[in-house]
Length: 280
Length: 252
Image 1: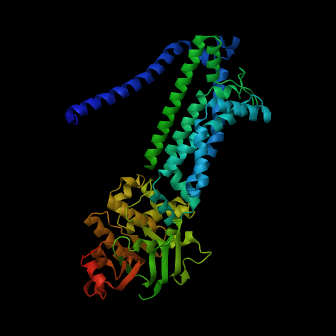
Image 2: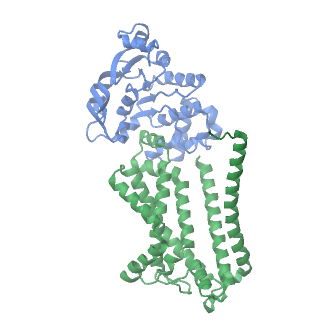
């Protein structure tokens, strides 16, 4: 016999359960952020942000690693965004669904699941040694770009596919060419989704350690060219913590990273909102 | 009035092996309102989309016979599809304003064609909005999003948007199917006014609408042209029993 439960009690039970699950998630998230900021913020000062590390990071600041992080992330995005968005446009607008597009899609999904340390190893073998780029911003940027490419392709594809078909019909019926339709109707409507993918990529690039330590190296000097070795904040954090150089500076670096990622997200969302208000 | 501008000769249209239009033979005259009625799936929309070649977007589409506009085969090799579509403005069943301002919606076609002069665009936009009786309602908020307009206003915006192309033909695919009677009346009034300047093809699943505005009406059924005659004749004394059954509401 089926157990009869009063629908009102059932409703109350599941509502409480879902509330609890959401609460746990939010709590864990905020706890991590709070913990890192609490441990790290005391170390952060203007000095910390603007001075280079001294004695391997035991003293001084993290300026050169901030520069390294920004340079590497920018490089990765500059390489990955056009490749990713371009591939997504091609896959969605310029080909019909066939075995080739399925293979490409499957491949890029597999790529998304590969651990970053494997990308690091691949980048080390190909860029650092085979192509002779050495430990450098360029090697690191290329490796990171390949790592975040699948995410950008995937999110861009989904964003493009979610643009109503009727928009395309209208554009064509008003005498638009394929290219005009893509650039003037499809992409503006898909931009928020595409930007989400790019912002995710930025976040991953900033936080990535394994792929970077193998390819960009860990020099504490401010990089002067694409061929300079450079240390990012996450690598700096790893080395400081791993080798027990200075836990307080490690947490300070982590706090700066978390704040940077939060700031980028907030900035991106504000920009998107402004854009959406203009067009929708 | 009787100058032939569109002529279909044994025109058939297939999607894969499926015929959507079978051996259509008919002529459309300059400056008439040409109504096409028929139940869903009878090929009415396919005919419109064959004229501006919007069916080309569907991978397996294929045509037989000829479809001519002013003596020129629409499917002849080397024809400019972009130019063809500019000559045949099309309004869809559900109003589809693009997610941009009212101004930019109207100016869209002209911008696609390369017009950049802000003053000429402004004149064009004002002119088209006046012709569709929308100017008074939106003149002070041209920069707001077109998505904020009501359904009826959106459909008139779509009509204004194709006027900006300076087309020869206006094709409407069940343009009032989602609109209230007042908005419908405004669209119909506008169409009557347009008859002097344009040739209008009106596909409708509302037979009364064809009776109200069309000069001649064609009845399509299962991809075939069953009957074509003056609208008053079709609605008072149709010669085919299927036409009679359809307009009297026995099926469809």
